[in-house]
Length: 154
Image (cartoon, rainbow, N blue to C red):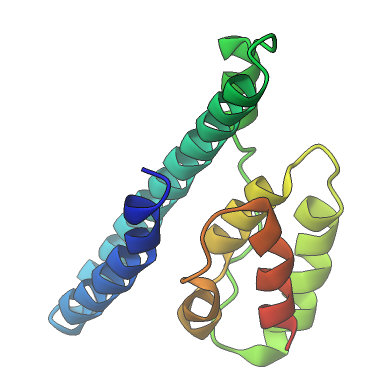
């Protein structure tokens, strides 16, 4: 699973985004608001599921490397629930970046209880439009969190 399926997931997200845009073009203003809410809810579910998968893959990888190590399912499950953040989603407006970053930095980036991949999941759910497109192809890994921040800051 780690190789083929994971690499194609960003392509699926791009295709879904295109379909969402086509749907939005055909809706009236009231329906657009409802559709955006549905899309956001769907995206939250996807990224939460990906976080769970990532944690499971890591625990399996650790156990296979060290057969004497055991991982309690409670410990794995407790890390998969990401706290709900009340940050406003960053829109296209670049002038909002500094305000967004200040809030995100305090709530997520400097939060030592979150792993880098959990921070990346939060970041994915809190950016939209060109910012989301810029980091959409990054797979959800610890290493890619710093890369996503670098892309957005540039």
